[in-house]
Structures are given as C-alpha cells and as structure tokens.
Image (cartoon, rainbow, N blue to C red):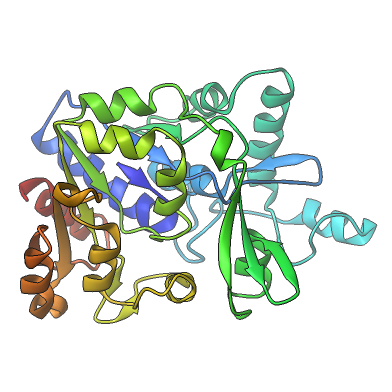
Length: 312
C-alpha cells in the first residue's frame, strides 16, 4: 500500500482487520510518504509515519485526529517560552519521546528504514511500515514571494496562501528505501490509499525507481478516491490539486493518476456511490471503476472498504 498520513492510517487499520479475519498469514507492507518530514528544535519529525503508527497501535487521539491520546504539552510550552521552534506547531510530550528516539538513532548512523523498524517494534501493528526513502526528501510550497516548507504552509497558514507549485527537495537523488521495490514486485495487490494525490502519493511516485516498479509488477494497482462528491474527505488536498490544475473530483484524480495500460498508475479505482456517474468516463480511460461506500466512519466501515478494494 502507498500511503500518506491520516486517511492512509484509517484505511490501513481497516485493511489489517480484514486481512486478519480473512487472509491469515498475509503480510501488509505500507510504503509511507516522508515528504512532510522535517527537522525542528533538533528533532526529526515524521508526521505520516507517526500518524499511521499511533493509529494502528490504538494510541492515536481520535478526537483531534492526530497525536497521541492522553497527551500533555508542557515541553512545547517551555520551547515557546525560550523562543525556540515554531510556536504554531505543537508537539505533545509523548510524541516528543518518539522524535527523540528517531533523532538519536539517526545520529548514530542508522537509516530511517531501520529506525522505523526499531520504533514500530514497540507495538503489534500487524503492518510493516517502510519509509519511501531513507534520504531526506522534503516538500516545499512555492508561493508568491518565495517558498515555505510544506508544514508551514499546511499547519500555520492552513493552505490559505495560493500555492504556485510544489518542490520535493532532494527527490532527484533519492533512492527507494530497502524493501520498497521488493514489496511492490512481490505483492499480490498494490493499494493506493485515499491520501493526498499531490504531496503524499505524488511524493512517493517522484522517487526514482518507484514508478518503474509499479509499472512492472504483476500485481493489480487499485486506488481509493480521496474525493467524495467534489469535496476532500479530510485536509486541504483541494488546494494542492488546484495548484497543479486538477479539478477536485474523484474522476479528475483518477485521470490524473492515469491508467497503467497507458503508462499511468492505476488498474482500478474506487469512487463513492455519490460519484457513480463518473464510472463511464473512468472506464473509458482504461481504468476499471467501481462505486462503493467510501466513508470510513469506524473500523468496521474501513474494513469493508478494504474488502471492496481487494475484491476489485
């Protein structure tokens, strides 16, 4: 599975439950976007990897939708008092423990993939999390007057500054992390999570070698739309799509990814029942299309969506 953060985490949780009940012994590999990552106050922050880890571990704050449950924020308060870091980017105390561990192991010389194995071993996740690359590939947003790290544009400005484009710094020289190409080549099916098509899935696809591996795999590539009835399910992906000239619709995102038979990404695409009218256009582009309920309201509906994706 190719995945970003929150939407990918919820879909992975459903996929894990479906696999445990119906495909015992199967392995799930999640190739996770690292373009949102950054250094802050000397710590390496990996938002998508951590969102997925906390969700699968049952440690995610379901009310806020991010961070650890039962968090306190005393350290962030102290950092603000010292004038260090980004005052609008609050890290919880438990979360900081994760970042300290990651930063410590990276400074010892371990690659991010090995560090992720170490950190995730704490919990029985039922999924192996693999960063898309061990190199630092950070997404920056081009805006009028300059550029911002993606986190500043997304978290501080809530994507309100019109984006002129996106740049993944370092992507040209990055290589897939160990296990990424093997997971794609050996997969029975490759799923594309309902994550941000531009800065999550797009960043993964931008790492040299990954698109070629997806083109060559014998597995079918099945995507789940992050758009329902013309609106994003979560976040501000519409602002990202607008910046690259793609309409905010399930149909437009499918055509943006393209059919694998024509050099694109997808063999099949799931849209919500509300977007069933788009099926003929998607099919005409060479992508098998199916309309099913996409709202992941709880683990049960997430598991049913995973079952639908595998059925396609």
